Image (tube, rainbow over all chains, first blue to last red; front, side):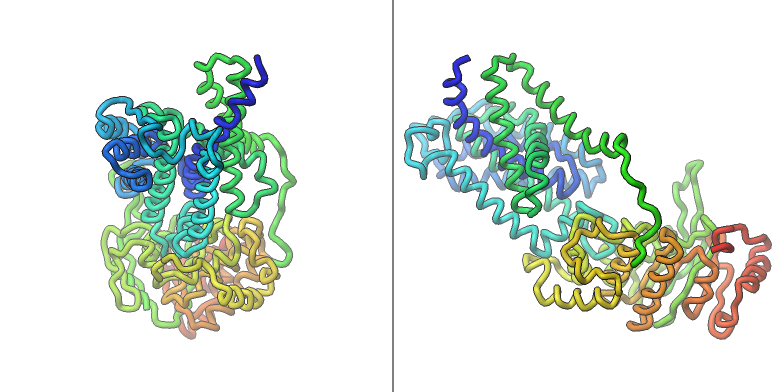
Length: 308
Length: 264
């Protein structure tokens, strides 16, 4: 257990955490704002990378490829949204249906289970080779951090608009929203599209970073996303009240997740067990609010307020 | 203003839980009518209100609001014409959003929600003055989350939201039932104040006979999915609880059996 090995691995962990942070922000939008657990993301987390790599191999630049990947993710969100609203299928099942369909779609996009892209032949935006020994403006950590700040700024603005407020209201109280003339179905679909667009963008960056897209790269993505959301809230929830800071907390949560993961790997744990451990940790954190409500007694509030 | 033409609604048809909730209800409200609705549990009061609001579509019959046929209009489109306050204080507001944001949502009822600001500075000032009229101290808590408010405060806020854009029809579904008597009285007072100020056509369900008699210019009583009494004008003004009970027995051929309505 050479400590230098761990220290050398940390920048890579931070870069991965940042890239997954974009994905986690997407999960936050559905899980916390729309109040829907959207399992589509396990499929979308490959679709974005697949589209991006195939586009780049076909000669497109990195930016159009990222844009196309994002659009593909939004289409996946649209599919889940239609299953859920128009066809009345429960949200979780809708996500599973799209996720399963995406497995075939992803294979068709890539033509096979795995497509590589060579960093020395293509002009990639991020890569694990761009962590050390490159000017800071080419550094993956710097670039993805910029990406996240820009995304948070855009989302902060968007959720302050009339439309963004309508999405928030839809997730918070759909009866009230309809009573106030909000088309809750439309807003649910829009929220799912937005979320999956972000996930696909994250996937496209991840595929570039690791140099390949793989049909299994999204497996368990929802758990990583939820872990980031939960870690972010647990650590920064008390101090980060503002919406932009909450999104930042999610991204930081993702970085922490990868730092812990890297440390656990360094400690020599059987890596086959990692997904099991992640799932258990997320399960416990999801249970905490329930346990709190059930077993921790709170002072009873009687009657109404005197000035109400 | 509102016209219900022989409305039928059956829940869970063809199952053992089948319930004929509305059996051919017809009702016509004049502009400015304040109608109180009373009846026992399962009489169809809330079902009638939900039929108007468009929570689901009715099986048969027609619903007209201000002359427009809204029978097939989905809930969120019908909302343009309606202001609604629910029995459960949690239902009418978005708990995780600020007081001013809730008001801003309500002020955009019936408008296209675009990428303009969700709330403007001008609106903030307007809402502040509006909240002052409630006398609940909410004007100093504009950025507080609604989830922190008491039930009475939330109902008062919901009332404000329901009437921020003047509705063609105000639907109050036992909106004081979940409150303690003192708070309920205060919310009813605010209701009267707003209804009178804006001359709103109102349909108010209540479980309390005294309230039903004391408020509005017309009273209807429902039983088993039908309207069995319709009292208005001078008759309504002279009405007493005993009087109403006698009339109920005559109309339905049974004794009124809702303790809550009698004692409340």
